[in-house]
Image 1 (cartoon, rainbow, N blue to C red):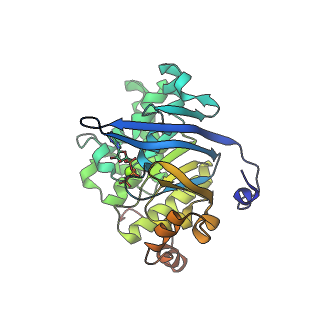
Image 2: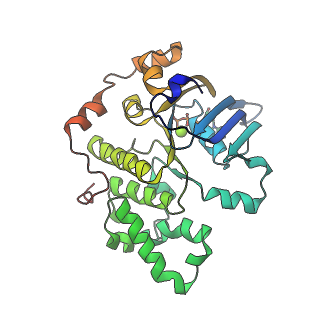
Length: 294
Ligand SMILES: Nc1ncnc2c1ncn2[C@@H]1O[C@H](COP(=O)(O)OP(=O)(O)OP(=O)(O)O)[C@@H](O)[C@H]1O
Ligand SMILES: [Mg+2]
């Protein structure tokens, strides 16, 4: 890591995630091959937000699936908290999974519409903590789900509702609550606010920033929106055709890009400061009350 990389925060960081020479190919119909991720070497430091940017199809989601251990690499290694994911037993991998969670763009598609929010949010708790299993643990489980909902600005009583009874912003809060249930260290956010209205988007981003501060979370944040990236990320990695073409401190990469592709991405953004201007004058709701209409 360079001096510029550490200038934004003064504390010494430890490395949480190390990607080394990571690659993933897909074989399509016939003999077509797609190299979705190509020789990616990156580190993510504990407590930072690393943004992954790049045009559609540049390999952002595939890279996050590799780093979460949801997809096997064709080559290269992923180390989380020093453990090489490929060398873990299934039981060790399950245990490690508690420490890494994901929030997707469209939480609705990943939520079972027939499950109540209690059970949706409780799923990682029950999976990773035996003390939450069984009938006797039910009251304690409901209490914990209530706390998690409140921590994302939703009233605890909403846990008895179904996903379709929530607005888009509320549903995204539910999926954030679920991601936090197993007390992860790393949260991958894949376009977490892209499907939301601009005003709701900024409230959810404020919430993410506040939760990061409270829990010391590390974020890998995938976004098309460079204004949002500028606001939230410590560092940015620019992906093009599966390769990292530029990586560094956000202000440097977006302020003085070295690679022509990064310049192209920036040129495609009509108003790079739209989000920033809005939140400076707006009232961020953070994790407090009054956010349920979102
Ligand atoms: N399961 C798969 N099978 C075959 N090809 C795939 C698969 N998943 C991804 N790809 C291909 O890999 C490349 C990278 O896809 P990926 O979804 O990682 O891009 P992305 O940067 O997340 O794009 P977007 O911004 O649209 O979400 C694309 O060419 C895509 O078609
Ligand atoms: Mg994607």
